[in-house]
Image 1 (cartoon, rainbow, N blue to C red):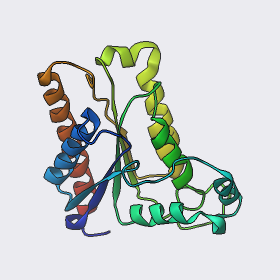
Image 2 (cartoon, rainbow, N blue to C red):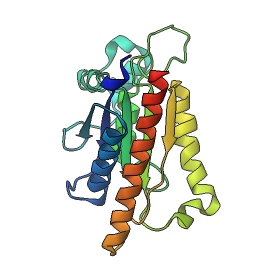
Image 3 (spheres, helix red, strand yellow):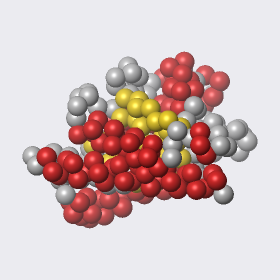
Image 4 (cartoon, rainbow, N blue to C red):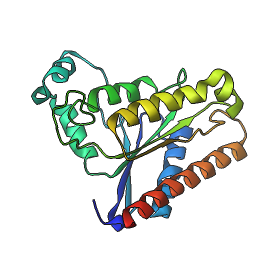
Length: 209
């Protein structure tokens, strides 16, 4: 989309609890994106939508032959093509994405849709803005220990988004997802909303230039 006033984003989660810290944080990210200038923001929960994240024989065949992309994967791709940006909000599992979201990426972000590693010249239809909002259970120091946070950034921003050649990507660590203190949850949601606003304003400024 070329008109910056018509930017659309989707906030993606995969969580079985619709009132979880993840869900509330996702809503805060959406508020920030809207406040920053996006015209519309949708929430897409992979589990609630019934998408199967299991990479199977049909996905393996599609890796070798793009014309064989499974119907449910193609439907998910078409849905994502309606948006200018994807924001993925998730609880940190073993220093990375939870299984359902990792499987969603594995199945949906296919060759010649998200990336071109064969020189085919395919027109990549995946959104060109991709952001990650990992939610740590505790404070930030735990996720900086031994370079865990740097590792997540290398995997998701430099590795995944970078390999796709997206025009803008970032990772915003949010913390205290399992705190018993309501103020900690409010602080995380405020941080999520602020980050959403910042990336939206960045997109609007770039498209208006």
